[in-house]
Image (tube, helix red, strand yellow):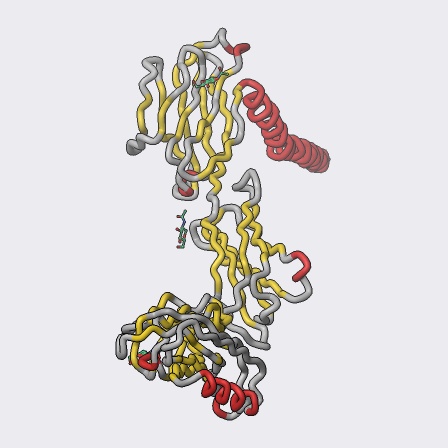
Length: 437
Ligand SMILES: *[C@@H]1O[C@H](CO)[C@@H](O)[C@H](O)[C@H]1NC(C)=O
Ligand SMILES: *[C@@H]1O[C@H](CO)[C@@H](O)[C@H](O)[C@H]1NC(C)=O
Ligand SMILES: *[C@@H]1O[C@H](CO)[C@@H](O)[C@H](O)[C@H]1NC(C)=O
């Protein structure tokens, strides 16, 4: 019996012990899971909330190379407590752990904890509980989070975290791809915003050319956090698109306003249709369309000019005296970096009587000369010498049809050195030949 009651007692004790274990287990669980939550909550409320209210900070964005001010100031409500030290910590791209790097004591002399960096300057006031720090010549590696900590007695520490963002404006340019005349789509130009942070937006404003051009944009991000963005402009390089204005617009958070780069679409081509035009009785001009503008060169039968009696000024050729010495084939060459084209002028200064001139005129007319004018008069009885300036068309030698651009007769009173006579009559039929190739 005794043994029985003993067993019951033991069971009861066990039961108690069991329930005790259950109860204590519950309490323990509460200690393990509930209490830390409350503590964490308290830390969150008191820590960040209270600190943020007690310390004035902020977030800072600065352009690379500029000076940043990291503001930090304890609110005046805390003046009853003694400030013993201001500590700055940083966590940057370069050094991701949050380490102390500057401490300031009542002497106001900042002390660098691990290595001096003179770009940092303490500009606050210790007695005023102002911990403001200045960082000059900011680099990308400085980007990160800066923590300003006030150590107070007896209150402990109060801190705030100041994020520092570094922006980098891009290097911008528009590069002409120098398209030449054609019928296939080609790249006209590229617009680049290089090495910006954050990435730039690059786009083309093409106005009413919108349907005639196409754009693509690519970007490359570098390890240092900068991005290069390139936008390309494509189209068919026709002569009608040549000279049209477009704009490349670059925008981004690093800029207060957009950058607009104007660009003129240039379609380059070698000289086409070189023409020789008579601009006065003795002067001729060579003209040809080209981009970039052609440079002109005159030659006489393969020999470079000027020569006596002939003056060359850029595209212009002037025959200073209308003598047969100047007879010959003159060639004008228009050239630019893309090529060249030439045209020919045949000059024939003939002497003879006026009737001979009429005969020649008639002959030229017969040969389908478009226009001529002959004018002759005698001023002095003993003048026998007549000269005619014949500029004969030889249009490629195949066209055959001489085009008379001008027909002129004029009075000349120049000294004829050979026979010492004055010529008072000049008949001229002038036709100009254009031979290109
Ligand atoms: C703290 O010091 C900085 C630098 O001298 C100053 O610009 C700023 O106004 C001060 N802050 C306050 C709240 O007085
Ligand atoms: C970032 O890296 C690129 C590529 O290496 C370089 O060209 C650029 O200068 C760098 N930018 C900065 C701000 O360091
Ligand atoms: C003219 O002749 C010179 C000498 O022969 C030559 O060097 C030059 O290229 C020629 N120019 C033209 C336009 O034919």
